[in-house]
Each structure stands twice: as structure tokens, then as C-alpha cells.
Image (cartoon, rainbow, N blue to C red; front, side):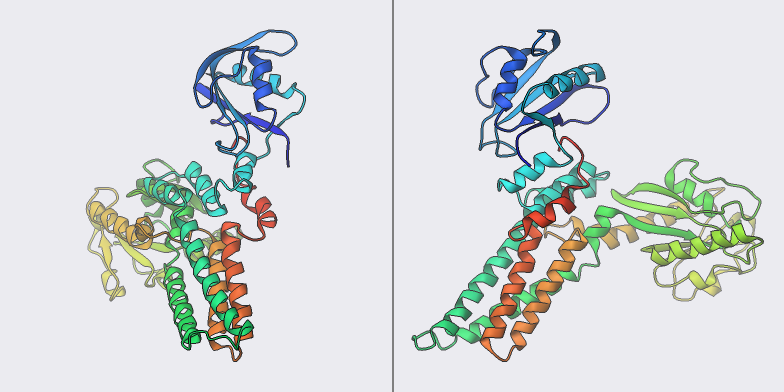
Length: 442
């Protein structure tokens, strides 16, 4: 993709100010056509009146900034127009740009794609930028900001540099066997590779915290009918997300709600009551409840204190918080059923015990994904994890190789796997996959 592109770079919808970005060799000429005045000094805002080329019709009064190549976001000549954020103004300016020969509307992520191709950032930083745009919680923002700033890319580039240095030493021993190379060269090589392999093993053993933080921790509320599952969802969501009724079996499908819990993203789902289904619709609801719970990171099993133990007991395991609700109606008959598992007795109606449960739930969420907000960069995507796994496996093979030539080939494969994460190799084949989730204008 080439040429000069333009798009709305700020969010869609009515706002006080909108930013329209133009990038490419004709960006300066486009600004000349829109203003009829000399170009402003580089990186200095200048007030301008924008007019429609050919007719002179006034479009808006705003600001123009110019960023000459290569010192720009994309590495190309870039112009930014700061205009009033009314939909009519934005549409008129975009329409005027579309009428200028050589300009075309940018595709999703095309500005950032050009930045990657120009070496302004690597692929991990571009993915971090997308995560920053989509961040809903403070913890997500912090993680995305570190990644967009290059923390993850620097880690992988550092590993790759060490791999290439080890490979160079090994190939020296292979290519120049008669030279007086240090006797401990192979020993040092093995020590370096073993250290790298250990660092990668630690990096992978993160409990998928970075991925969970980016995507949200999945929590399923399960249990028998009429125990208070929907009431608990509404309490957590702070709104009437699910219908609450005294009639058993009201919830037939999975009802989901996004939460910001202690600064962390959580997707919580209210599921159908677990019992012997009365009809095929309820049976499908029970099947979906069990399926959702089977993929959840955490389950909350809710039972009623005044009921005899029934459906849902088989769902309780080490990844479950047990809630005994309706303690205001009578003494709990459930606590003996859950030896070794913490039980939270409470009443969603009166509020008794609710705060203790919410504090415990926040603590569990913090433990599951909180470490991702530390200083060390963490894995945030499956493609990163897959590549590091491939790299680590290649390192293990190189250490066990019978011949130095075989060890060298495994090191090349390991370095290539790391290079695919940042885009140092095979960048073109990865671009479409990575930028398909970007919005137009970024």
C-alpha cells in the first residue's frame, strides 16, 4: 500500500475537536489546496480557514500542524487538521480530501502499519497501541502503555541478540576448526543457551496473567435454581443485568456483564440453574451453563441456606468461591459440604456478609492477573506465547544436539521464532493478521 492517505484520527461522534490525519508524499500539497496559504512551520500549530478546492466554499476554521518526513508518526510527510467536532464539519472536510487527486481514505490500521514498516515501532508496540486504545480499566491501561512503549519488544530483541551472538561463536567453531579459538567456547555456548532457556521458561510460567488482563478474567456464576445467582450478578454489575424472580428456571441462557473490579476487567456470567431440566429449552440452558463454566477462569457457586443440597455440587473445585445465600431465612445446611473450601455466608437481600465476599473476590482477581501490572513485561497474546514456546523447544534441542552443525540450525530456528514476534522477520505475512482489528484513522 502506498500513496497519500487520510482519515479521521479521533473518535467518531460529536465532540468539541476532531483530528483528521493526512499521511504521504502529497500531504503538504493537500494542505495548500485546502488553505491557499504557505505551509506552516514544522511542528507548529497554525490557525487556518479550510476551503473546498475548486469552489472556495468555507468548510471550517481550525488548526493545521505539519510533520515532515521522517520525523512523523508514520515516517511519511504528515499533516493534522484540528477542526470542530460536528459531524457535518468532519464529513465536509473528508469529502474535500476525497476530491483531491492522489488521496484516498486510509484502511483500518494503515497509519500504524506504515509506522511499523518505517521502523518507527515494532509489532509488539503496535499491538500495545491497539490495547491502549481499547483499555477499559486502569490495569489494562498500564499494561498497554508499557507494551506500546516497547518494553516487550526490548525483551525479545535482547533475547534474540544473545541468541545471534551465541550462534556466531558456534559457527566460528564450525567454520574455523583449525583456528586457535578459546577451548571453553562450546562450554560457554551451552551456558548462555541454558540461561536463555531458563529465562523463557519463567516468562511462560506466568499463569497467562497478561492475556487475562488484556481479555478480561472470565467468571461463571453457577448453582441450583432460585439460589440468588441473578441477584449476585446484578449486585456485581450495579445494574439490573439479569431478571430476578422467585420462579425457578427464570434464567434460560447465559447473561454476561463486564465489570471493573478493583481496577481489573472481569466478564461475569449468570447461568441457568443446574437441575433436572423440565423441557428441552431448559436442558439447553443447563448445557450452556456447564459449557461456560468449563471454560471460565473462576466459578462462583451459589446455594440457598434454607434449601437442601441439590444441583451444582459437582461444579465446586479449587477454582470456585462458594456463596451460601439467604442466611436471613435460616441456618445454613451447606457448610459441611465444602470441607477445605472457603464458604461465604451472606444475604443478598439484607446485605449481611456481602462486603466480606466482595473483598475476597477482588483479592482472587488481583491474585490471578494482578502480577501482570508489575514492572517486568508479560505475554499478552497467544501468538507471542506460541513463538516463545517454539524458541524454547529449539533451544532445548540445540543443547541436546550431537553435532555443532545441528545445534546451530536449532539456534537459527529459535532466533527466527523471536524475530516473528517483533516483526524482524516475516513481517509482511503478519501485517494483515495484526492490523485487522485496528480502526480506520489509527
